[in-house]
Image 1: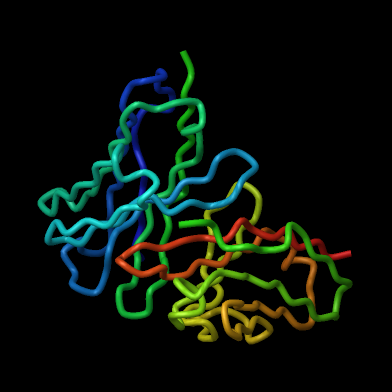
Image 2: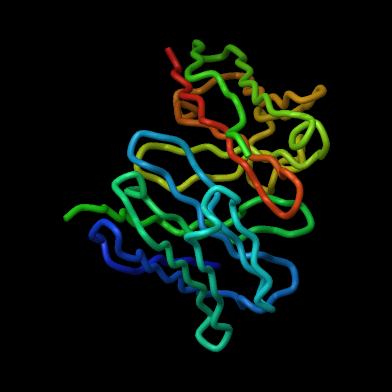
Length: 120
Length: 110
């Protein structure tokens, strides 16, 4: 059974960089069938797609966040990562990592999510 | 890239049917048959219920169905059950390798 697990600091100071890693177990991140993505959800609000990555390193970004987002993949560790720079309180959210089926275009497996708060 | 538009809330009684709309533009919903729907219970990760507009993943009840007309996609839940009470989100491919979610709809089973 595929599992995704987010990890990283739960508290980040304003203007600093948020860093999260998603560890994939039960399957290979190097499959040509999937992208790997990050989605966030501010408290009490809706979902927002942040970025996705292919195992080869090709990246795809939400235009509204692109200037602050770096997404990367480490196939040797079966992990992919997110960095969001210059964070503000508006970046406080539950961050999910998810597997994205390329051919059918949907997110089929999700991590449990991790809450990241931005506060001094 | 603006969020897709969903009603904030819908409600229905057990056994009834409800429909949740998801309105986009000719750049996303209207141009691609790539709308997916997600169910999210409080404190849980989203779960896909419909993909490619009308297809159900294995294990999803056939009480859930999807359709599309023009720039609006719809999710219909028939035979409402208490366990269907949750938040529902649509998501569409928006071109140029980008994706956009709807604002979410809270379903209340009366």
